[in-house]
Length: 337
Image 1 (cartoon, rainbow, N blue to C red):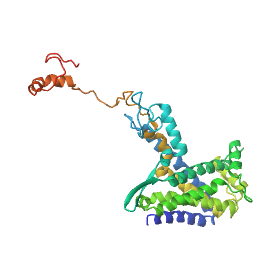
Image 2 (tube, rainbow, N blue to C red; image 1 turned 90 degrees about the vertical axis):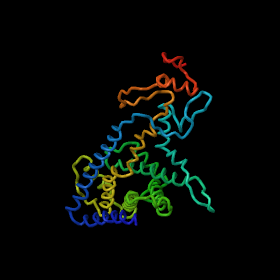
Image 3 (cartoon, rainbow, N blue to C red; image 1 turned 135 degrees about the vertical axis):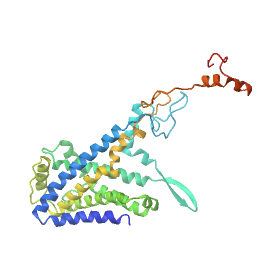
Image 4 (cartoon, helix red, strand yellow; image 1 turned 120 degrees about the vertical axis):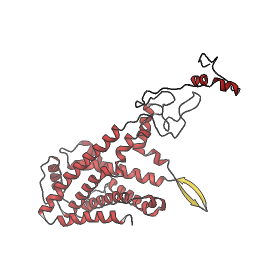
């Protein structure tokens, strides 16, 4: 039931795009005004969320410590799991962003013969990693629609992605991989009882939007066969704020564009913002040097302290009567040995 409302929302977007394509005013609204509004919401929302995170003070270091901290010379520290330098924190962040290192080490718990068994969950790591890298490749490939001349790296990336050409047009590896990864991630939310229990409707909404975008894009490439040159002309017009509504805006292209716009507008308010949050997370990007360097909270107001020597001087008679050991020399002189 939690997945029903997001599915109906995505189907409603598809229906609006399909019906709006039959009216010229609807095409202008859905193909020009809606993408501009969605892109504006995307930029403003991203900047607002990142600015709030960046301006949030972190008066003390709270890094995630998953290994031995650097302490005595003869104790080997975990330089990646518990870095004590900025370079170590950078390496940990790089492995986290590029290879999802913490997810690779994730374990899953399940009951087997009435016993709790902990095991590796590498399929989740592989599905997430392939999805994110395929999405990045697809986004970079789409730059050829908005840039003229097309950058060299985009052309090279497209040739590498379509190296295993099967027929015409070429089948991109990233298209196949991202579809398989999305199907796995979606099926996992339905089949895994623990994941299904903690899933919210917004979790399904992001998956359904991404599935709709990928499927409509594949249909545009292999079934409906959109006019790429006309689409590039329309995309360049959008990029320079001089859109030209042409015959390239078919119903399927309008569905694809409207789903992309919905995802872009939804992005800053969803869990997809982990893209920026992982970089600004103080539990990840800080070095754990609390033993070697004193960090003073700048918000601390001046406060009168009461040292142990002063406390012993105040209760010296009572401590002597109780025959407790004293560290100061006498009652009139507060010194600590």
